[in-house]
Image (cartoon, rainbow, N blue to C red; front, top):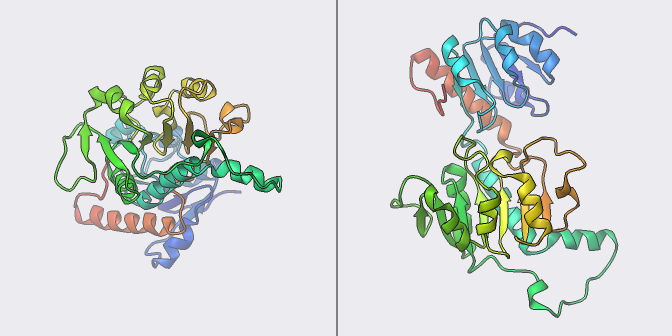
Length: 319
């Protein structure tokens, strides 16, 4: 079926962006598409495109009128920024729209691992009442008093750090900029001291963007620097972690567990070892999903459209 022409295209496989746009008053006509084929047709007339996961670089050749892309996600590594810049197409991220949700999800993964919730769910499915555990090392753990290392102290990382403090954790952060007043961390470590920081941490939370510097940041050597009882939580990007090295470290007991929301390949293939590891929680890149998200993206879109008309700086400008 041919998608109707419109200067504004909302493109997402699941999110109800159209409903949120209507609720905001729908100041201009729009078309909403949910798959790549429909997007390839609709983008020919688009001046404004709201998109994230459905984006393909080949769409640029089909979009001669495109002038602005509002990313549905905080991450924008999928967009060819140099090519957009060469065509005069502006790009803004949705940074901040899901920071609370992602930070809460990171904490949920920490709690799920320390309170052994996957094991509890397996016992529940089998209607098995687990007896009390004699060995203290095999019991549930507390977050309080443990050291949390947050890698990436942007909006999400900063909120994760605050939640860690609320659970009485000692929190340190890793970023280039040194400690500043108001930072919710005890100390800030520079990236060149990554292994030193990893050696201190009981929980490592990844909240950094994917850049050339963070691609493969948690590699074999980084995992070897972690404590044997440490946990790794990834709500950043899958490629920040060497997944093969992580699978080996988990299988060999060199780290205690992992909570993973993002992966090198998504959907995560059925043969991936993480599905079957009892010390791993897998979530389907859902950390940012929340019942408020569509409204926040549309609010950003409308604000940025107004700023473009007035010649003002965008909110969350990328290109």
